[in-house]
Image 1: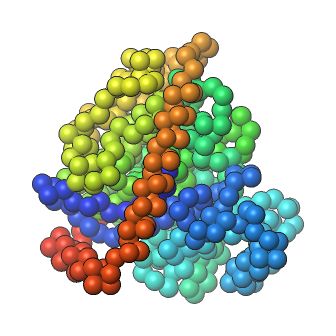
Image 2 (image 1 turned 90 degrees about the vertical axis):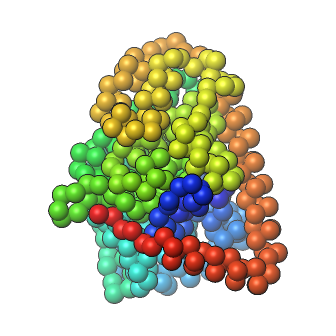
Image 3 (image 1 turned 90 degrees about the horizontal axis):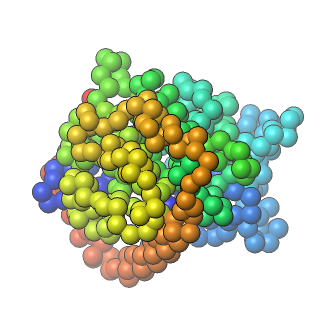
Length: 401
């Protein structure tokens, strides 16, 4: 949601002991070079350049450039149509199956680098095991010495909040129907011992533009599927800052309850268009999360039911043992009763205004940050790199148990 959202390691509050393991910079299709599906008519931003509106000749050159990088085994079966996203170690292209003309997405991951190989293995370990209507489906995999090509479903319906802004109405009933689909997908993942670890609105996509479209949980680059010893606890500090659970910040062993915390954050945004925890200063942000400091002040909270607030409160609790599990959340009275309700207040105006206001603010902040960064001297950059190195030496790597 907004500009610049990415999987980053948290900056440590001075009173918290954080564990920097690695920085994973990936994202979605629209905005600041992120990767993911493109909805019809939208712009696919690639390094600040839009594919939409480019001269046909330029677009053909770009497509030909990426087609040439693909293994002949892949291009023999799939016709490369367009580059729709790129990450640190990957490229995502829209393709058509040559025989059926059915559209798919192919994620090409460079596995030459250790980090790229880790991300690839993480996603494949999950996607090869799952089959659920609300989880992005892996179709097939092509592997070469230095690259892996993952053929997946192509979600063309856009992101969750893009759809909400475009709608003329959004009620608690609509919210519970969205959450039912997401919760069912997460319940399924957790039943397999899989923890997503990066649940956020950008990773919830509509399968197609129609009003009856299902929602897909996507992007398993940070997912964990346990280990051979059957220990499901984790230690790696990872995720997107605003959605990170308190136990991760405290560097405690954690479980799949971190996904439920993230769903509490998503539910809060879904009903208001605002974040429960937000601050440009990471130290202050993490302190807010650790204190679980949020409120139901401002629009449209006065029109939101107490049951909805109770649902959020039972997810945004600092004690993971008291947090609702996915199955409990599916049986919560708000989810059960509101999904069947017919008359509800329309929250659309407040939600969409808050979402657009936040998106505009984040984009401006991102541009300002990029401008400041580009104006730094090489000496300043070297000092900053030294500080990061010293911090990493002070807080050594700490992998998943």
